[in-house]
Image 1 (tube, helix red, strand yellow):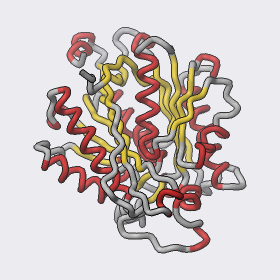
Image 2 (image 1 turned 180 degrees about the vertical axis):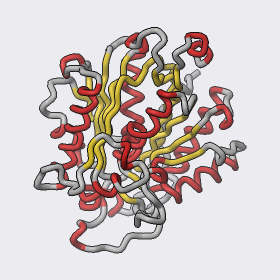
Image 3 (image 1 turned 30 degrees about the vertical axis):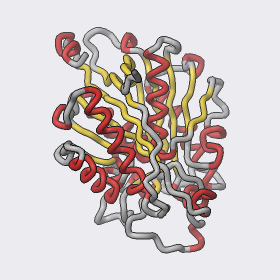
Length: 347
């Protein structure tokens, strides 16, 4: 019989975040490592700017813990651009074995899940996970170039201009008594198509996949929403987040008290014109790196479920009227206390 979840034994060694202007003006603006008010990062095109964000974020994550690229066994990276060129060009100069991923907005969780699996199995000792998105590049690829001035639908989400990078290691890297954030379990999502064809309403397309993964996880682990300090998706936005809560309630799980979404956390809903909230590969990556991981490491959050949600469409599939498949990968993250007794409590 198939085992629904994956037992993991890995930890976050470091994380870094790079964002553009709109993100730096949001409620988390002061938490990000690097910010560029021009959104160009010194590049001539939006696509090259996205690649530069990836390069900067990975350089930063290495510098924080004084690690050299030769110490990293593999990189797991992806983005929204065709053939994931944002990652390929952005990480080109690093002499590190590379796995290219496409999970749309679930790419951050997918990369972390694969990196943690490699470290947990002792096949690798130190892995990197990197992902990004850029508002201008995504609009040009999936909708219309900004120069067209197209009107956005009320439920449309704003693609985050940002890149997040992480280093995943074995818990043995930490000294006894040193607090850290552990990756203890994971669950791989299933591709689901519920017939949503509106590319402006990706939250509705992804919410059923998030509900499926979350329900399967509660059932398989015999846990309940109240067992977690926070259940966060990335990124359903406001529309998809409401749908998820309704779907979970119908399944017998009320997640409303401790549920949040990265697309809801990154922007000011009233002050910034983002309609349905934030989205894009970079959204959950920068929120996790800049806000959630520090809260986990210091113990403000003790136990958290992180679900990366992705809409797996392409520009051609949308033009042909196909439904938008969704997917959601899950990670269970835990604060490991400095006290060994408390450390065992979470095992």
